[in-house]
Length: 216
Ligand code: E4P
Image (cartoon, rainbow, N blue to C red; front, side):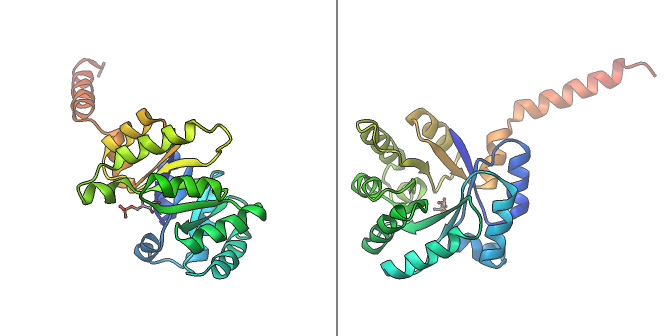
């Protein structure tokens, strides 16, 4: 399962890359705002850091506007993928961009039917948001399991399931068990994936003991 970093901060992409956890990068307007950086500059910077996809979100609300943005963003770097909210206009735009051979990721997916329509529109990826479903007392992971099972019935579907809105290490483990193609992980959760208190105390103890036996 691929790991995409959920950030708009290039230094965080670099840090994740250093431990083999930057197969891609996902952004959204909220993350761009938090980064305090200019959209195009930061996307191009991150796209230069990795070979995998960097998802940049379109903000127009009509088909032609999204297509215009998508065509423009696709010129920024060969690995930019146009992220589009799954609305009627978004599906129409994804269909047009697919014909133009521009890769898209349909985002804000919250139901199996939206996932089916995204595949039919030729989306390269979908981003189902599991944490936000958990937030309203629904089971986000159930959505992933359903989509993966549905897609598996149709080998001609090439749309990748990129699990988004990941909040905990368990979300990552369950995504892998469900057979998701990728999981988009915030830097804080990447840190949690790596750490274990028994590893920390074990390292400490070994180093302390080594100091006692090493030759002066
Ligand atoms: C991913 O595509 C989104 O940018 C992100 O995972 C949303 O996460 P949130 O629900 O924690 O804001």
